[in-house]
Amino acid sequence: MSPASTGASTAVDAVTSVTSADSATDSRMTPGGPGYRRMSFALFLAGVATFALLYSTQALLPLISGEFGVAASEASWTVAAATGGLALFVLPMSALSERFGRRTVMTASLAVAVTVGMLVPFAPSIGVLVVLRAVQGAALAGLPASATAYLAEEVRPKALVTAIGLFVAGNSVGGMSGRVITGWVAQEWGWRVSVGVIGAIAVACAVAFRALLPAPRHFRTGSLRPRVLLGTVRDHLSDPLLRRLYAIGALFMTVFGGVYTVIGYRLTEAPFGLPQGIVGSIFLVYLVGTVSASTAGRLVGRLGRRGALYLAGGTTAAGLLLSVADSLPLVLLGLVLITAGFFAGHAVASSAVSKTAVHGRAQASALYQSAYYIGSSAGSTVGAMAFHADGWTGTVGVGLLAVLGVVTITVLGSRAARVTARREPVAAH
Image (cartoon, rainbow, N blue to C red; front, side, top):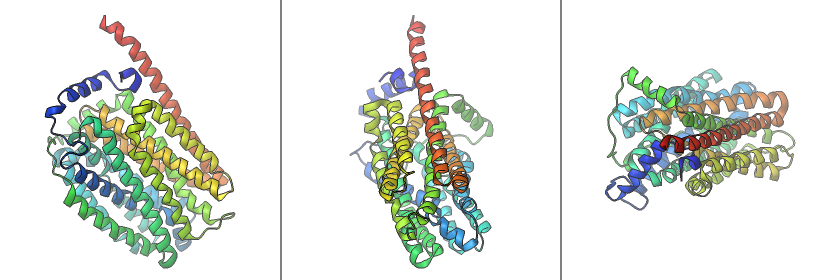
């Protein structure tokens, strides 16, 4: 595809063209090749552990509210603190990965996160719980940006969207299993035991991840000098396409964070009145996200990146509107559409960041992840506040505004690409 149809820069297309020409001598991994399955499964497990830990309290918020005597807006900070900690530390952790290596930083991050995870069940107050969750989120910051940078370096460009989609699919499985398991365990033994079980699962994932992930072959040590890092960050933030992708990731996650932070309160209250175990099982719809994320590469191949984003945004909006009904089947269908749209949009945007950045990929991915988790924190907090003020329709309203932002940014990107395409023939003469 031309730059006009994909929104990518001419420089990136040139790099991709050269890479394709040299594919016969390219030693990077490709589907079916040596190490690809081990790598995919290892990063899948890392994604499972990351999302299971990061959102381990989300399905339990009504129980946490009950034990500590706090409102939904206060209990939601156990989620917002974790995602906020990740957002704040993802850029520094990505810098460490440039110096010490992707695999080393990911291993250390998981080790700290699972250790904190075993302390969370013993939090004596809501304040201590929020602090522990913030530390856990900061530790997990070493995973997302380092993982996408590892993939960009070790996997051939044509397989990159699919590889990142599998990592994102691991996120969806982790988010789903964490919430389903915590829901049923909490119904029998309380929220403290349930987050302890998630911590133990994450430990197993972390050990398997370290044993399976192949040693990097194409990593080149970067600099930790602040001036160099700031220069790289400035370069990325000055790129209009990267700025649009960062905003799209943040807005998609605003929808997702708000919906899944509040849905437990809605389903345990009238007119539904569901028990905690059933509410936890609602998160089985994450399986839809696993499928939509893993097929994002084919979606982009058929519709182009912007077409895929329009479809993801439209699907998410349709789900939000359906979820307003006081009918459990329609609410469930709405959650299915929201989840499918979100994970597809996230996989498309995050893989586009890795393809667009021609240097400092860890920083480029870190900026995306920072924006993404800022969106999660904002969605969790604002969505809970909107629910407190106006019920579920308030949370849906916040989500629809975020989807409108995604569509608007994508339209602006299309216009910018057309202007660039018109200018390039003139420059050639």
